[in-house]
Length: 595
Image (cartoon, rainbow, N blue to C red):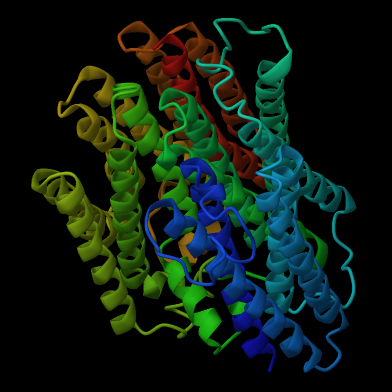
């Protein structure tokens, strides 16, 4: 019964996410008054479905489906024994649906009153968050009592989720009030850091300032997770995804201005904001309800063994979503700094989709080939393949399917040469790195870093059609970032790798040599980032950002070099993820500011 409830709740959550995105399309296309009456459309139950009417009518139809799903969730919750928390959450969701229906009608009949539009969005987000909490609680079996976890981290996780909710409302006001283009440049406004803060300009600038503050809070939360929750892989995974989505959201915010609120840019901005909010809500739930060590590397899927939902989550985990998000940030950033304002949003979207599919395929084949290694490592033994939840044959079919889809997307939306290059990079990662190098040499990470650096190079090539010096520097940055990132992890998990017989550098050469190599590569990394200022297209803003971010990276590398304590390795590993996302975001900010 509980598994069926969790599945139903997940369906309702995903459908609501799609509804929010469709609502963004309605707003971006101006279809909100295509049906000027409510609940009918032009005094008809079914009106000719074309143009803007089709968009608005589709939104109403999907909203009706969400309402029915919510009612089904409530009924299902009340059939569960002892599920007091689930019942209360489902009832709250039903109440919010009722409020949302009323607000939806008032929004139309008031001709899109600004504050009603904001209230409509706020209720939608509150309803969505309720479903996310409901689904997560059902999946992890929490809700009976709060475990004795770090109270400070629980508070900061809640604060971050709540602040992000507030930021979404501010963004909704900016959109509804027509202040989205009050500032036609970014991150400045009218060429000024602090313009005259009145009318639409004031609202627009306030949104930017609030976004910056919430961004800092998200980064602080991620740092706190890596500093205080290193023993909880699920929390670290969700924190990393949040940082990646934050970087992507910064880029999309800039694109909103660069492309003058194009439908694709604004819809993607809302979709990413909603996904980021959901991620932070999940983080807060994990911090509140899951005792330390309750979930391992396999994450939430392990909480529902044998269920269909768990199977879906297992397949998702095969793709390593954290890595995908980081790769997408580097790809999008390289495209935007290569040709700011000239690259089609649809080209960016198709490139990111193809890249995500290719990365998911590579990660799936990586876990398939390394299933014998994963089975003996405490960090990975609960992954789907070694745990027996997904058969090798099924994993192979899934990975192949993702690879084929990636090839088709790239070939159709970009060109055949790009698709072939992506396929070649996929083959290099699987055959050269995973099958051969990783088990052969302690320099496996160094050579394998070439595969991880390809998205940054590829994004530039797709945007310009050329291989240029800045593109090679971007490749070099990611290439040099890879060893410190993974060697820090291997220091922390040295015994795991030794038990599995993987010749990682700490196992073969010792911890002292590894710490020294990390420091040397970190110095080279920071130096390479400054090349973009000297010989590339970057300006002073990027140079300052690179120095500040690089200074922190070097400080952590020096700390690790001097100290053999595991905490130093964990801190460097955690910061390295944040560092790369922020560095590439700084590139975009600098380039768009000077475009």
